[in-house]
Length: 270
Image 1: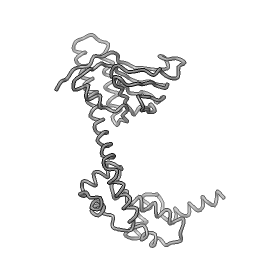
Image 2 (image 1 turned 120 degrees about the horizontal axis):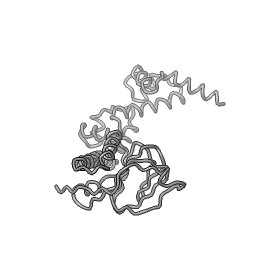
Image 3 (image 1 turned 135 degrees about the vertical axis):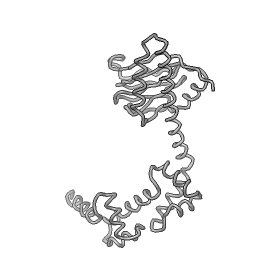
Image 4 (image 1 turned 30 degrees about the vertical axis):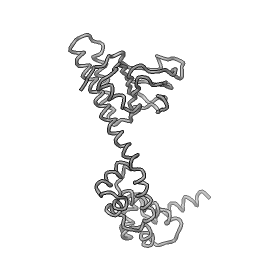
């Protein structure tokens, strides 16, 4: 593995309030190095090539050599600008998305704070520790981005399968929509389908099916005079009692009480 340590060009805190007074936006420019930034405060908008994202302290910005970028202020961040021209670290960073909505903000913040602490010293031991922090930053960034890319690939590659399964669910709402039945219809094993469905939708199949059934029940409660038993049957619930339980768990109120509140609100608006 070819590990070439980066050349640090600059490292610190950037604050547009002081750096670019009375200017609302930076000039569009072509980057010549890696520019990794972590916002400290909510601010303006970052633009990299055709991508853009509102600046907030839950994201990492990773601009790469050769990209066009500019920023709409305000913008306050920790940053490191560094040169890596080849090798494993270069290849890894080139694959990182321009923007990552991170779940590890505190970890990144800690790394940047420590990097800034050791950047200004000229001690050999501090320089060694600084480079260890840079490697930790790159490792964390690459690891998190690989997970994001993996999830996006799952969503993209299985879109048609999921669309087929979801249409089947909506068109067969009163049928047995168990994991075994739906996965068989989609042409996958139950375990593979469960993992794919959860990764792509953020829900288990059971949670998704129940949401669809409750949405249909909500519509029937306010547009028909069906009994709860009839609604439960038409929406695919196993019994009226389970329907009432599932509805209250999801909507925070009993079915008939929900319908009364809707009617009261409608009458008040007339």
